[in-house]
Image (cartoon, rainbow, N blue to C red; front, side):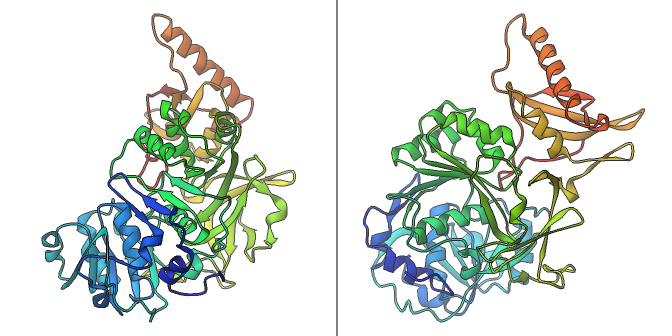
Length: 469
């Protein structure tokens, strides 16, 4: 099957979806991709109502969202994929900015009636005949919310071609390939895995709303999952579950946050027969590259033009990307431009070269300031996470009445000590972590306070919640 250049996703999946073993599985039900080629997933046969419209996909379940995308690509002129955590008060802004004139939902139509959109299409994962004319008439714009969106959302414009630029249709990484992901498919990372399953010849296990990680992993193993993806924070939390031993993947992948050596090594130890890789991608810049040599960071030889056609450069210590996989533009009245004059996207990710390799040390916008000295919290976390007793950590600036601020770390242990000796054991662990930091980091980066906690908060996007105390 040729590489995608435009809509329609439906036609691509229909041509490739003759194998009845390929499916999208969710906790509630499953859909065979072979069945999709002769049916409709839109209840009531309302496909014609979507042609030429700007469509908001707002569903309760991932499966409904996935099927709504299949229905509307090539038919709608624009599809806005609404993440599940979007606050209701921001919906009017989204509808106005994206010029929404139709909504696809698996929720009650009454709940959508107050939004001022007359065309409400109800969908469900039920295959019905009579889909109507599926011939594509639009190179549909795919609108995604940026991963760092807080408050009023920021949206970027993609095409199916840019989103699928890193995928070779019909290839698959093995046969049969069964994907699972901790991401939600309504965000960039999860959407990438959905497209890999649909276009790459595989199946996908979708999580349900608020489904506990142990339940998801157990269900994934029931479907013989072979490939699993998530952020480093996703993986650190997953490996704390006994159910993580249930799955036996062939491939594990990290993206969305800095993949430090500790989490890569944890995965290699936990799944000794699996290939462990990490990828760099962002909603704006698209998929830039993958690293599969078992090491954090990436080879310095990647800088310049890569075989994939992606250009990388370092400017002001941050990574810049030019690629056919990048978004076209921001949607609406956004002051900043997505690209610079040469077509590069500034990722804001700060790099440091050590020998023949570049290492990610943090985000330009995430620097904490302690006494006038700038610190990347991720750099400190990477050192703390190297301690064999540490599962994950979070470094931040904590207010101090004398110095103004100090570097503080919250640490989750692999196996917290208990009993009468616990306080002494924790003091010893704290001393070991501080010694590790002092031997690796500049003095001003060494935490002045360490607190052991049972868990750390993770955003819906799978990234650690970062707040200064």
